[in-house]
Length: 218
Image (cartoon, rainbow, N blue to C red; front, side, top):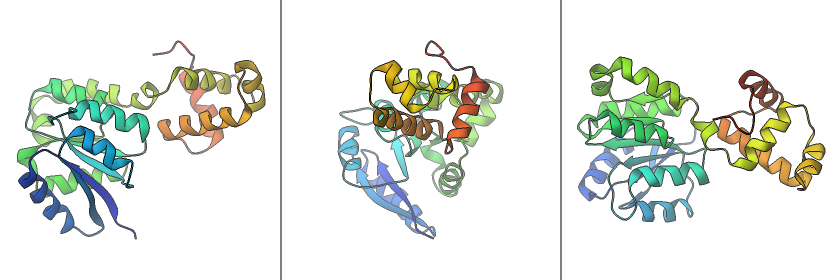
């Protein structure tokens, strides 16, 4: 089984070193890169492949929230786990809205860090145990909003294509209607499935029917 690849992004070198040692001691986990600011992180992701970014909320040059949004725009398949010193729920809301799969307090790094990585790795969301204890009811609404995150990443053109897919149009028909090539339509469909985490075309059609998807939907 190949190792699960992780990039660390935090402006404190000692913290990165500590987190790296915890991760590297865990079987099937591997730190493949490090960055000390948001811009350096985005440059690093152009050069290496990773499965997850463990990201500080507050970083120089480009804040973690903005970096996460850009990562999800360019690499929607990469999972994001935020590390934060902030316990306020507003930071959690911003993190989830940016597309993060997890939010962990820095004081909880250790066993809980590995548990968070494993949870996210298997397709679930992870929220700091402290935050869950403080405001469980409030977080229900946050997580419901989180489930729509993939849709929020779609471009206007992708929404147009998705709507036409739901109407039963073929790629050639969509191409004629939108004045683009069939190959471009197929690329849009591929990106839509990646963002919505859908593998089969049949499941994509089922999704549009269930959601009643349209260009104007939120």
